[in-house]
Length: 106
Length: 106
DNA sequence: TATATGTGCAACTTTTGAGTTGCGCAAATA
DNA sequence: TATTTGCGCAACTCAAAAGTTGCACATATA
Image 1 (spheres, rainbow over the protein chains, first blue to last red):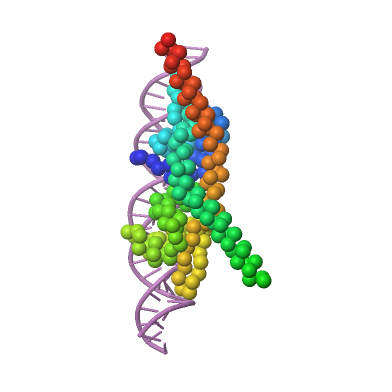
Image 2 (image 1 turned 135 degrees about the vertical axis):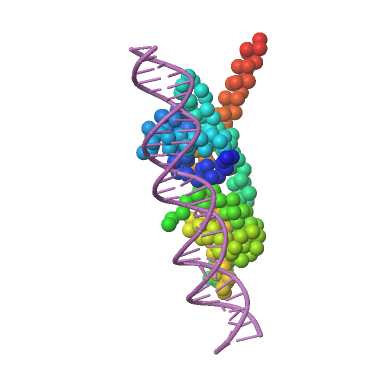
């Protein structure tokens, strides 16, 4: 099944994996060592992350080093862009509110 | 249960609601009119979004206008920050790869 | 070759979450 | 006051997802 990046980052374990991989590439075994769950459970998370291309495998003999695909993270950034204008608008609204209060005090 | 903002945006309907509210505040009924599901289903999504403070209610008689809480959206931006450096690093790696290929052709 | 190790896949259980229907309550309206 | 309307809450169904154990396979290593 094709995975969705929003669904992929919804899980705390998967976010933790992404954070780890932002530092350095790791094998599934190495990742499992960081969490309190079985290797297979971590492996399923890896599968989800790989299917939506948030991580990329690098084969080295029988080991697989997974790398963060930072470029894919930008999709999240782009989605967020539609709200950036609202952040600023909200600051303006705060300004308006403050000046309204100021007027009422007079 | 305390909701998680990443879990909140995992659902496509909830993301659509946030997009709608980025334009203007809406009542639950108004939102339900936009989707092919019952008002109660939308109401449950509103509850999730409200619990994690991604939206804020504005009471007006028996109607409730929900507003986007843009400030909360910034938390996503902060989480993404830890990966921004990787985007640029990745571009550098691409440059290195390209120059390596260039050398090999000589 | 025999054995140990790293990995993915399948079957299963349990939990979580999306959607429904039905209900009760408060505010608007006749 | 009686009725309609907007809303939230609870119980229920059903599907998906997280975790487990067990297994098969390929690659190292003795």
